[in-house]
Length: 584
Image (cartoon, rainbow, N blue to C red; front, side, top):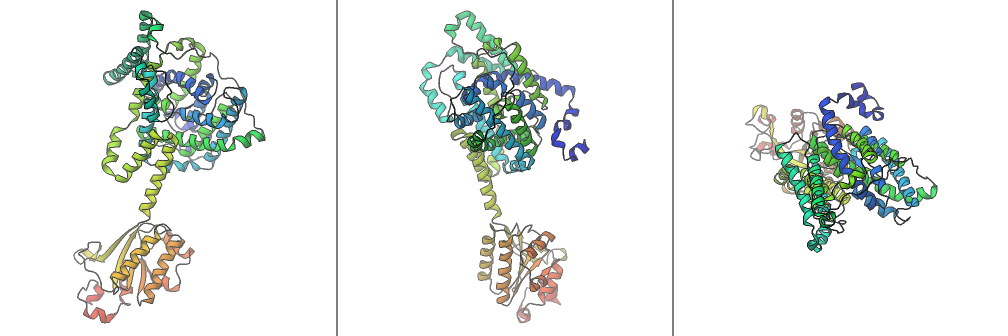
């Protein structure tokens, strides 16, 4: 196993890292989760395809082969790839201006776009751009997950209450539309949804070993059938999934003409960035819940291969599905085999029991997805963030409310951007601490205690942080204030073991301060300089012959060397005597 991990070609068979470790208990848990996922994707696939302007069966095809490839070549244990609401909307907005939705030309463009997206994703994976996942902070993940969970529940309101309404748009749009249709609520459909929800909650609480989602869906479906028999389908008005095509995904091929590539290139780039962000965010969120880390580069490769394969098996753009991944996690999946089993079961269901799927009430599905949405909200972690950090709270809030009231993908970008802004703001102000030898401590160790007396001619500072273009102004302002407030301290010694990085502008800041001190009859000195800092200062030409002589590798040597340069007439009248040299 270690040999495979160290192999540069491990990306070709990443499933060999986890497949040999699968146990019998894992197989059982994955099979149960897969059955739940296969049932859940039936109505969703049809709905997503309709949103995307594709024939209904293409939504099911997108959840078959792409899901298998992404599970085999990705790094997440729980991420399930397939069609999603957001990806479908993006696809429709990109292609509807080029062809009439639902037509063969439209389908061809969709398959071609899917292939191009896959190639771009694969290229980013090979370019090791998976590190982009490191810029998505934990607070962004928690806020994004909670916001998406609210949207999942909101989009199921129409089915939960049996109302014919537009469930597109943002949360406020959905709630406003629902408010206009309150008088149309179907109490029987609501009863089916509520019973499904109650069964799921009860089973999860009192029978934790039983797959509560399947129990809830079967219970809701049986109740709907009984009510239809007693009252008549015309009276109950319970909407069902409807008849599904009993065929496997037919072979297809993208049409890569220069004209198509030119037309689709901008859309392919936009869809790629969105799809990768969505997949990696979901994968990281579920990884945090499951106690493992994902490999961003491998996830990019897995998503790319899944879309390339999908374009040849009648699947349009697939990415990480919040609905299916959430169901997969909540249903107890342990390995990526759950996603593979679910895709195979979906094929079998489509072939064997597609006509019977028409008895599955949409209200029951809504009840199950309400449970899924609730499970995705990490209330404990949200409370921890709210009580521990105002910065992280702001990131959480911006991501959460952006997900609810703006676009889902924009929520991720907004959270990441705010995280970077706050990080840069923090790193642009490195901590600068005044130090001095403390006679009360053994060996006169240096201390930052403000009560420790200072030398009238020499100031010791420790800088904790990097000196780069963003922090140079803050450090220069501190130097200027120090010279103005303590003009008699003409000598400045910087304890540099806290400085990890210096760029050209940061090095020039040190050089200018060194020249100012020298012009005032003093000097500036560097103590405990790391090799990396020394190399950076030399590269930017910030250490001349004089500057090199002002660099010391220990505080004792620095005090001994700097003491020789102090004004002895001032030392003669000084009562501080904080250095050993002063007492001798």
